[in-house]
Image 1 (cartoon, rainbow, N blue to C red):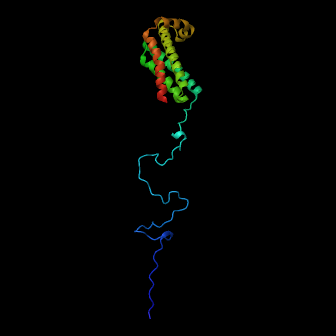
Image 2: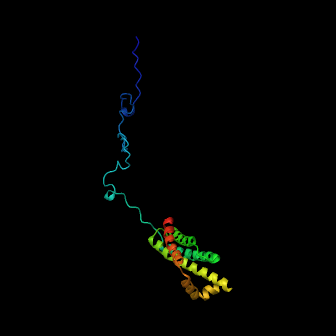
Length: 200
């Protein structure tokens, strides 16, 4: 007599579940420690803050960005050094061609403001110091130019005119100053603010 043949054991489903409607994962239990197990993905809304709870940030707004950091002392020293170098260059250019150039005055101010803010940071005190120092740099450059022209005309050395007769050079500047002279003086500080903003 033959014995009945047992049907083979059906394949075991994970977690002991049975497939439902062809879905092999329908009977799975959520994995412990997974907070997203069993959740259905929501439809995208395009709102990046959709999942946040109200009041998640203090006052309902994200925190303010940190205040800009910088070093005022280092910025002012940079402005001073740049102003001296730019004044000499401006004076040499103006003295060589025996006339002032507006673009050179703008360049002096821009360089002073840009260098100071690049080194010291985007601080209002550095911008103000750059404006004041660029005004002095353009004035000093004008005095250097006058001294070069006088030294050439008198046949003496530049240092003799500039250092030994500095008061006479300033008096001559006052006599010769016109609208354009004062305009160039004002262009330096304006350009210094522009240079400081560009660096920031």
